[in-house]
Image (cartoon, rainbow, N blue to C red; front, side, top):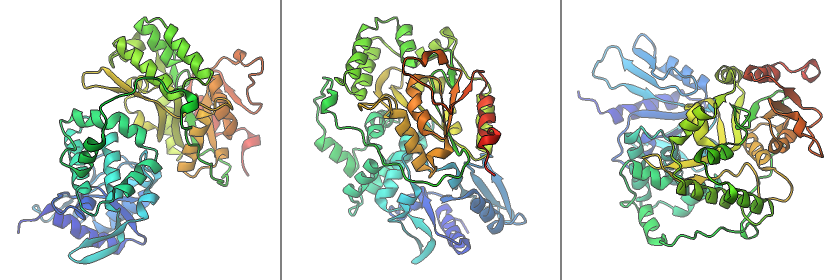
Length: 487
């Protein structure tokens, strides 16, 4: 008998469904096959806890019959390869669960995807313990995957585009439902900034899809280059923080970037201007306009980006900046992040800094932090700056102070169902103070406290760590003073 990989993978669904105590969500290629019969896959991508994943592999694939390997050797992102010991022709079962403890990917909410999900079907049988998202929700996950996937994985990126094309071409696909996923998860800016460049990167297009035809039909050729005054801007939405009971323990630590995680720098944008040897007069004028509410934050970043492009800013410049300005990560950063993760503590970067500097110094930052809210620089394939995707969570357009980082902290706490009292914010500058004030644990790290005079006061209950040693932060989080410990 010659096996069909997809058919054998589907058979495993029946076994898995019978084993489960509660319904789990299925995403990936086999889920797409429920709507597009031409989609081939053998990867079983279930959303489940680490305990469920390991128990499932142990109980359904006993070691006397199956060889069991985790090819990634990563508890937060396992990829189990299960090979039959007695039938060499039987296809490898690939079980790549998305572990809940790691949290949903950026712009994804597993519970939201479950709302309109339907039972998995095979041979006219439905498996109630395995749920497939609606075609609109599944298409949305493919957009998220495409924008977040490593650019070196070109074949997987092309498969994402093929899935988007096929799903949106289904007659019953509801464009309004699909758009609601994009807007409810605040993904529109990321989509506008990065979709086209990523599609070009893999020499693909959406022309053969209904959504591609809509884009072409309704797109305009004219581009408005004039800055939008802040008074005409639609204000950024600020969600109402949920009331979440405290557990009296730090469950999330958020960090500023410039001067905190990266040493030898105070403001990354200023360092870039200096490195390009450009007269900063225009930049200073824009900063003043922003402070007077004559320019929005988004346009401030956009216009700075236009000047960066005129002066030839290239991705390679950031390597030069690091070397010439002696920039480095704070000491023991990796060890400290691992120590926090081992205790189940979430970590985030909330900064108005530049992502290119972070990734030059810490290429695997996305693996080390649960969330990164930062200004994103978009480069072409040859490294030239194309655009800037500005963060909502730095300086803001309000009249009540610098609350952008505080809003970012609220958003991350909301996502992971963590009380603000169970969060910590670590910073070193004036625009970190509002976020610090709202956090349960406030840490001032390697900053100059002499600046906090003339009305600029540090919170009374702040912890000051003067040494450049990330492990000091970890020690403060994991071993609070006696007065802060809970009986």
